[in-house]
Length: 119
Image (spheres, rainbow, N blue to C red):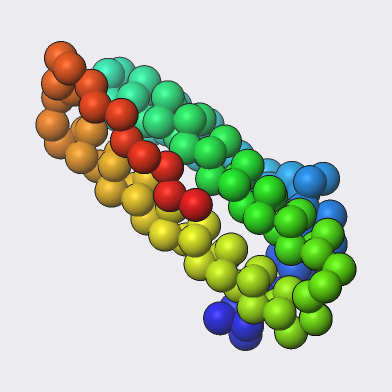
């Protein structure tokens, strides 16, 4: 995974609180509006994307800030904890995708169960 990170992406770890995702990641909703997606599904995707985006990004930023502010950790330990935080982000992203697919394929039940966040 270390090889997958490029310099531009790794800069986000310098100041995770001030990190803003690249513009292309924010254009997802704009792309949805241009496609011929039925309106109820488009609305669902916009709502789910907005909700999960904030959950995932906030969780990653908090994790990376905690790691960065830990003075007792060595650089190797900080690197490993950062990699673990990114791995958790990927798991959350996969959970988000599956959750959204499930919502598209099945209509919402009348009684909504609260799902637990994974961090």
